[in-house]
Image (tube, rainbow, N blue to C red; front, side):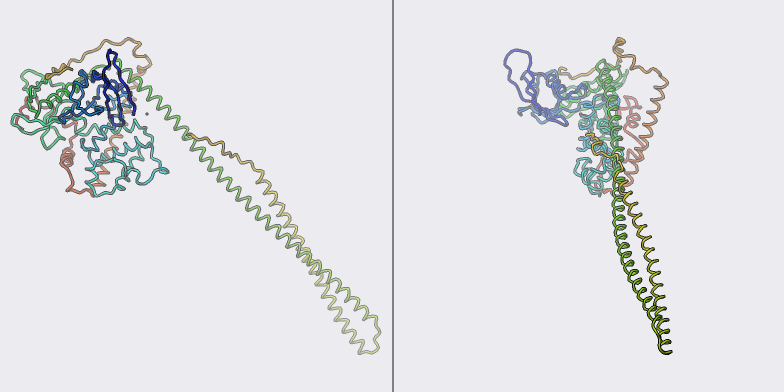
Length: 601
């Protein structure tokens, strides 16, 4: 945690006081002088976290009596009932809410702090969120925290350990953490390509339509001492029945309120227009009325501010935000291009590796074929040698037989019988000689055949060697080194509301560069219409997805575990009402009718 010292320029040795300020994502410690004003501490915190949209935020603390209070900027810190704990604890929270987050929140740090606070309020069930919408919001929260869904790195159970759904929703359905995780994961995968700030602003755009978003509730009574709720928000003051904080019964927009004041526990609202009845209610304690008036003052100031031209500071912040957004879009496009190139290179690498494996297989097969050819050639050569020896032996035997025939023919035969016998033997010898000659010729032919086979084997061997040499000389364009790694008022009891919209003096031309003005209004109109159509289509798809999820999990709902908020929300859905349509219906009645209705409650 950073430790920051704030020293005032006044003389003397004032005692420094330690202060701990807890934001939604950090804990800061400061040392302030004992005479430091609340505004000085607040500005110090804003400078430390880099916040410029300071008008939404405040420093909250718990006083010595256990009540929640906001630090007053025009009083000394120690002059307020901040307690005696050391260091003095404060919470840096959003005190006022915008009407439209996408139009009013400029800085990313502002969006991020609102996102964290609204998310915590939904999880703590301070803001009612329907079950199907809580799954949708969880997918945006996961995208904001982890970035794009990646099946290769995603681990089962990763989301089950995260605090993503209100406990009320978990208890209401017979579903395991794994079943909830699977449904969140499906929508999480659809958020691919969203940056953290885009996911957070989409989260807030959905949450701002919830009935309890941005409303500060206070217990009050009317003249009949009926217990009611008073709600103060960015649009005005609402009155709710004791058992229904979702649907207001009476609403007073800021534009219809003329004066707000209190005396002790009595609170008075005067409406615009002659003859308009006053709206009176009673708070349980005087400090409650003070807090209500403080919130009314701040919300009305922001209400009027939204309806005036932007100040120079706001214009500068918006221009810087546009430039920053454009720069980030360029960075995203560059990173997307690099990612695409990296993926293409990885595919090319895989293709080369496959080709290398194929060539290695061909080399192995060629080597095996060469070995088989060499073995065949050796075997055939051995057979040829044996055949040659057999042919030589047959020729020798044939020669011996011929000599024997010749010797018999030239021998003298003394008797006829001997002559006949000799002739018979001569014929047998001739037959044997003819047979031996025939065998010799057959063996010679077989030897010639084997010689031809040997010649073919040596040709095959030469072809295999040539193929192996050709494969070994193949130049494979593969290099492991060619792949690169591509490795944020003084005390008051009355407020008179001035609804006059002042038109400030137009700024000099140099304050708004010409290049920021649209050159082609028709083109701008087309772009606005296109964005509207895209938004309507996106909203329609979103509603269909929510309806589909609600139908899917409806069969697993445990009816006995439904809360009053669930039943009230279901009645609103069945009537076809929304937060805004309800306010329009109530606002259509006259102020006198609203006051009369309030007193009859």
